[in-house]
Image (cartoon, rainbow over all chains, first blue to last red; front, side, top):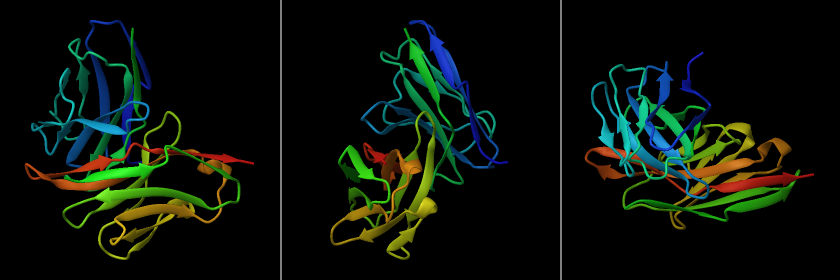
Amino acid sequence: DGGITQSPKYLFRKEGQNVTLSCEQNLNHDAMYWYRQDPGQGLRLIYYSQIVNDFQKGDIAEGYSVSREKKESFPLTVTSAQKNPTAFYLCASSPVLGAEQYFGPGTRLTVT
Amino acid sequence: AQSVTQLGSHVSVSEGALVLLRCNYSSSVPPYLFWYVQYPNQGLQLLLKYTSAATLVKGINGFEAEFKKSETSFHLTKPSAHMSDAAEYFCAVRGQVSGGYNKLIFGAGTRLAVHP
């Protein structure tokens, strides 16, 4: 069964700690994306990657970092520099950059 | 630059009634348009897409959308609402090339409530 998995579903952290969110896809897609979702604000693009070992900043990259060492994996690290990290994080992939995107189930991060 | 406006952050209908969710876009190039659905605490699922073929696009779960260039609209409809349609719906447009990348630009979403 092809798809995108994100883990964990819920994540709790103390302020000042870095945290890494996992995203794995077995769709053989080249492109992957990370979005942040806040109530009433739709989706905002954090980072995207066109191919392995390449990634670009999206609209709200400050306080976040990513890596793309494998085609299937695109982990997102929320650093302590992110001023308001509590949000719902969505990972997506597409066959190529710009094609329709397929989304994972999301990770809800709460930082207190 | 491309943009998307979804009219009405909340829409409420009775079960069996027509569902109409409005989306207007702005684009300087022929747009690719998408509707996604999101159930609570889940990811987004693609409902349908317009890619410059037929202007009436049929999607999953009985939804369809009509591309109207003159009105710059891509409204989502379903003839008869079901309780299971209660969710949040997002319209998206594929944006202008930026460094060679046409990113998706999402609207703020419309939450659909269906009551008995």
